[in-house]
Length: 192
Length: 254
Image (cartoon, rainbow over the protein chains, first blue to last red):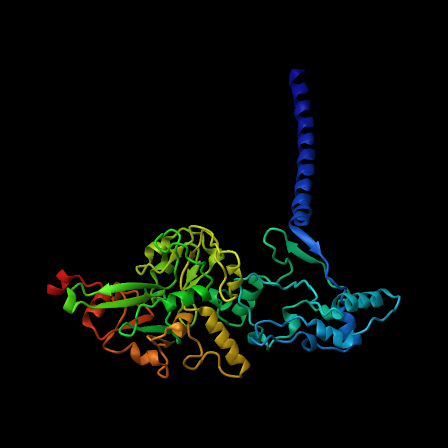
């Protein structure tokens, strides 16, 4: 009798243990894959809901029309407020969401001629040296996301601890391409 | 130690010690260019840090024969760098064309093996976070990444200036791997008021340093160690050349 009784108890303990293990595992996975990134990254949106799609498709504009090289060739810059103002000088007065967004741009930035605080997804840490002029042989979209097809700017995720952008190009991506093309992968090729 | 590569381009610095007045312009320009925090008390070796340092040399003789020289000491960019072979995390490496020994601060774990291994004392450890007095942080340049407490740093021969020179050459449609003389010079060379410092590709016959390094008056620091530095010194004075290899008087007599 005594033996059977104790055997039953062990069996029930095993089931309980298995349930607790699964619940714990699921909890840990949710915390690790969903909870922690929520804590670590702050979600920010662009100051203006800029549609690349409208400009590229309807406007027929090319990347280089707005994203021009800096004199040093180090980066392809964001357009100045004046450049936006060349087309968007006056308010539309329209009622649609897009018109309201254009009016916001004109009123807050173009007319007072203030720089637009765009969030740069590709922002790199300060110890990175990247030269666009060394990579002119490539299409923009071979490294950058194809924003020309995006109607809404994606959410900008910023690491709360390091302040780096989550969506920036990572070192393994640079290294892989350099290795495949037989370009030197020494540290100082890209770092300073 | 034959595992180190030989490069087609070897950036070399040649310092004419007979022209150097020890004014310190190279030290200051280096400090400004590479974001080295202002030194509060230079005699406090825990708190002071200089990629470029000037040593005073004398021949040790009494007045009429007394003679002095000043020796600016950057990182020697050794052909066989003792610091690289001791680094456990490959934070420092000699792997790029040009032969400049790299130092990656985020990768450095601060073990300081390289500081001990460097026979030239060219490496410095950040015992403290750098402090810029209020307002001076505006002078921080984008050329060099600032270093936190706990990592080692050293002269890079202003490697960023090479990057800028290559970039300029690309934009002008020239070959970035065949830069003309003076397209790339470190800040110290640019600042030297007496023109005592020369910089260029040691392997390019069109560059002045190519000849200067071969001069019979040229020598390198502690050459007998076999570190094979890319920094050369020139002096017509024999005692200066001898001190460069740390020849002891007893050894000379023997």
